[in-house]
Image 1 (cartoon, rainbow, N blue to C red):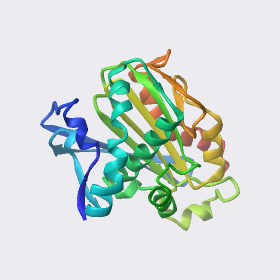
Image 2: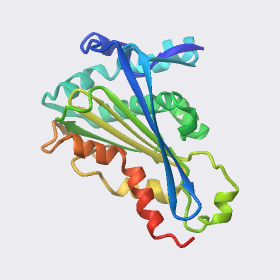
Image 3: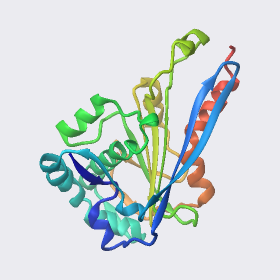
Length: 257
């Protein structure tokens, strides 16, 4: 096994590291009996700029120096202008390449916190075998103009259930592993948001609804003109990144325990 960069290694040249440390923030959440959610935030300081962070989780020859490396290198031509906020037309072919890289990135990033890892083996095999993002995933991009998010990654993993299964007996039989994840990545003016779930009603909803100010990247709908007419400030990206928690809290209000 070899170390895989969370951000493509080539990014360190046009976007050099600016910090000696970076903070890994997580918000773990568990359903509690009696209409409650336990939220447990924690932070861990890591040495080095986040753009240099690596995880030892992929094979060296076939993956890190093979198809994953090729997928990362294919993103240079459009990621640089998107990150810089330059005028650019993202073709459908480019979106497919972008979506593949983003699917790989989200899959790799999840291993930085096993407790919230939600992407199933079936999706990992799909990405590896077909070299494309799974069809039930949803991805969006937006033009970020804020100050709080500076090369950042935020991830939430949770166990989602349908109303037919949602009961105190089902919860008591847990803990259930996460099956639904929301990932948000940002660098420069590019804000990326990704969702995936093994619950059909959730990913079908995400296919039909776009977060405010975001443009759908996957599944591909057509060419994307960049930058977006709408810009995202810190409040907007925080709301989008944390919408899984907000949704969970709203649903709990309607549940009769």
